[in-house]
Length: 123
Image (cartoon, rainbow, N blue to C red; front, top):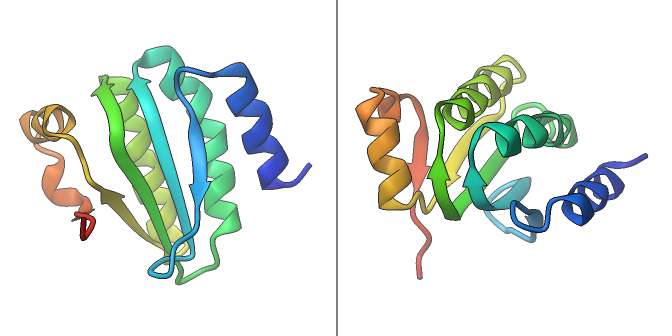
């Protein structure tokens, strides 16, 4: 099963916490997350995001658009931290795009904001 099929299967079973592949000229892979990254959803997203890392070439750029994430739990933060470490091992630049203020505040409170490459869209 290829990545797009894995993504489609995930999205059919998780209509409230979707992961969508978007075209991008600035990175090798752009995924837009939506919904709340609470414990269950973060656990369900984990294998999809790990599979996404395998889609991205070594020394590539992988961006997660968080603009439609309403909440992130400690499990969600842990998922992003694990993903960042895995990306670094493959020499992939992981960026978090358009992080909402509520999510940003949680990451900042945990003292993890400075460990991530943050980006804002032009629009």
